[in-house]
Length: 294
Length: 294
Figure 1 (tube, one colour):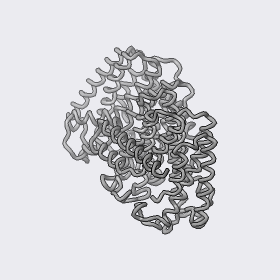
Figure 2: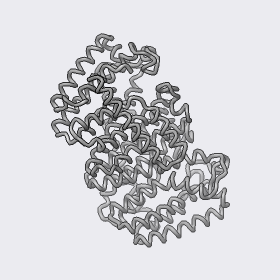
Figure 3: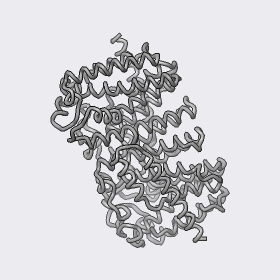
Figure 4: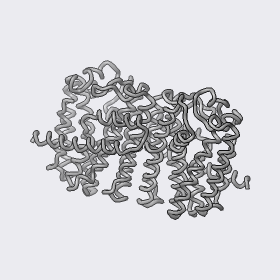
């Protein structure tokens, strides 16, 4: 089963990578801009969000091509957010996944513009997809702009910035994460299932699923910062401890964080069953998210 | 006639301003983010782009409400581009229209996020407009993402950055401007006329009109940098001369630049006549663009 999942992820990642590059190579734009967009998109790692989107599609639909541009758009948005987050004025990171960050490889102005370009292009890609009808395009754009904009990811990033160096409750921590990382995961699940023609009842249970999946993702991130292998996670362990960042282990202890994660996994799987998706790869991906080592 | 035009612009500006604020006030998002988005949107000056969009609509259609969200979205995009352009890594401007730039009033991270949020929200606003059908929404989003993204404004910004301190031809200069400022003007004209149900032949002539209008806008900008009143243009005159920036007066002389502008005005008006828009405010707006003193 695990072997199957690994192959599944590998296949999807390859398809997504190929399509991401194709969409960028097709652009007739200034060389440096294209180079800079391609640099960060190629450096992309796990492609978790687009893989989830395709798995959510395949839980209900049978022509995966239909979900591909949404997966591409989502990964463009994720990539732009990393480029901007890494900027000196934000997290000021010099390396990401062992390579220089975009503004280190190029320069800050180029990194800002490459991020802006990827963000904008993601909506262009959906609006031009010949496999989707106009209603599908509008619903996807509505959901993606909501999840990635001020109501979603950007809002979460703002909350996160202001929470640094402040004491914080578990409820506040969850609010930051549901916006900052959860909203894009929610989009991944929604977009895939919506295009696969899930019913509105199924979509409603999947919303719960996505909510817990986002929290699982974040708790595991915090746990890896303590117990992870620095070579695998691509950054030194203990980096959260040095700063004042609020994390689950800090609030609940390491054991408490693991327990919390397991209760989220249970709730996520319950929601999947109610959404009639218990035989899809989403079930295994939930464990994969919970147990990932990087 | 001039009095009429001034009233027309004043009315439209007020309607646009009110609507811009309403769309932002409606957001339930982190306070600082909202404050920062509102700050730059309120500081907005001439609202040329949305006024043009509404005038293009009214050349053909009779329910201006239908064009309002496109005008709002366009102004959000324009505002985001100013916020990002002013950043230290880009133009490094401390003031805009006599007020501190966004990153000076807040901080760089907030300015980056406010720009990202306005950009993303512009697509959300269009996708949620109850007055438009799905095909209209998709066509607007297609055009807006093209005009503002790597193919359009962001691409132009990149070309402009690389052209600094380099010798440049008139053709290269025009290429920069048609991308950097021209594309959004083109969107303004297209979106308004499209929603007003202009024919495809009319739209095609309007494309020419928008092209010349963009050039008029830029030539006049360059001329004002030499002959303008610093109090009116909101920056010291002669700022282009000090740096290596390519401008029309530098390439053609001041008199040559004025001649060039006048020939663009003639071509713009010819295109308007062919598009059956010679009795619309677009005619007068062309002169207004050409003769503006700030």
